[in-house]
Image (cartoon, rainbow, N blue to C red; front, side, top):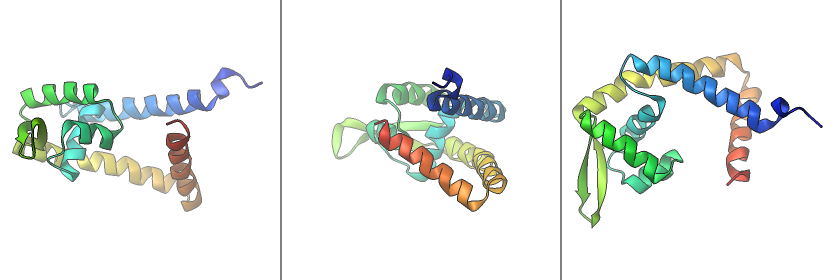
Length: 140
């Protein structure tokens, strides 16, 4: 029987915490956390999503997304507006300040991603991508 530190959940958890620490350090210069960067970059790609759609896109709980939106709206990074098709729902959009910030932090994400691609050969990279997708599917 393997020791607990050899379990997949432990090793993947370590990798996730290392990545989070790395990005939080990089994004702190911009006054952001990793979670807030996810919101910015998701809206940069798909502006106007609703809270539920944004949560689904990011694989987060709607309540977590709502809290992030509240804080980021106070910092004038995004705005809510009533969804014209459903007056009970809101669409979330980047402000110009939020769009500018997303454009500033995008290279940080791209740089680490590209560095990791260079550190792994194509087969290892494809295997890694396949592995994380299998975890997502298996653990639903």
